[in-house]
Image 1 (cartoon, each protein chain N blue to C red):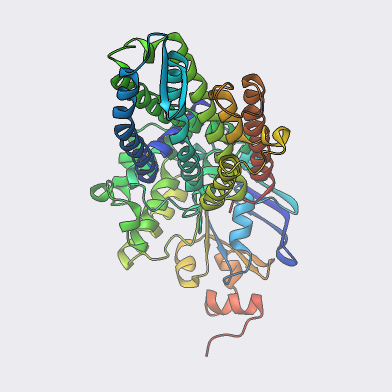
Image 2 (image 1 turned 60 degrees about the vertical axis):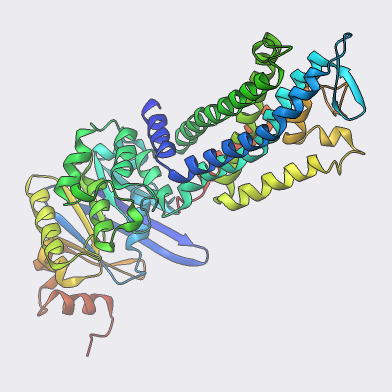
Length: 262
Length: 235
């Protein structure tokens, strides 16, 4: 198994498209953060003696909680692009007939899928850590005058850990969808559809259903229920994300085992 | 040794392989000869665990391919339609294959040297010509120093020097006691390389034996082939 995982890691790290997509995601995040950091610093400068802050116009809230949520939200918003990275990593198998070579190298397909998921999880963890690090750095630049220790406090680090868990599980689900569909584009399309359903809140009238969507689960896991209309508790959100990863991985395994390696 | 017994496979409503049986022995090059679409590639894909058979068995040294430990150290294969990601560098392509079967990294350089690609190993595969791609495929097949070689149309895209090199490589491989199964639709090339022949047509075995046995009573392998397959000879 270790050899198969290492082989998959070599595949991932020697795929130029993967690095280009990751670079684009991180560059976009930096661009967004550069726009926001000044606004955060202005808001922090006007924190009232009772500790409230006005980040959004007309909405005063406890500064510490609001700034912590801001760090998590900063990571969350850019993570909508991570499924594209996962889809690219998975989709390489179906270009140039590489799947045939992969199955020649690791003919036990269950073992192959586990190796692929472990390698993808490692790379997605790296991507999520980089995103969390950028959020933390820019957060520090925004709050350093009043709350210099906040971005590396236990609460902030715990929030980023939850973000990394979400990003990796969402990425693995997308990876598995790409294996099922044998297509990068289909996996990106499915991810876009899931993101759109959550962002447009078309299921606002059915919160129980909304809570079962992976992107909604990410929001439920990371955002503050006091400031947003969330549809489940954080523990339930984790269950939903784990469920998506397991079910899609299981379907990918069945597909990989049952279909010819073409 | 490769042992194919009563193998069958259907693609949708079409029978691709129909009760195919033959043996490829160590120390010999076995030519697997047939026209395009005859069932050669389907048979090889089943042998190598890429496609599931409808019936029958295909074993290598008495075991199914998927049951081999580190299979690339037992079997080296070149298959049509199973190739590298075009944007990956050749050296990286061989590196992941080597890692997957615990093949020493030094073998990557050795096989690149052997197939004449050492100087372009850092290039992306999409920049390779057809012949260079074929050489890379052969390099991947040789990576694990396998006992058994299974090559599907290995001389496709090769220049005359490359064809001669492949022919000699396969002869040397068999001479060292190893098993070579060479699938091709090129009769002259197969006649010049193989010791034994298996002729397949429309998914069924049309003839098998040593080259001398298969061509007995015919002026050439080509004439024997058309007689066995019932196809009309070229004008």
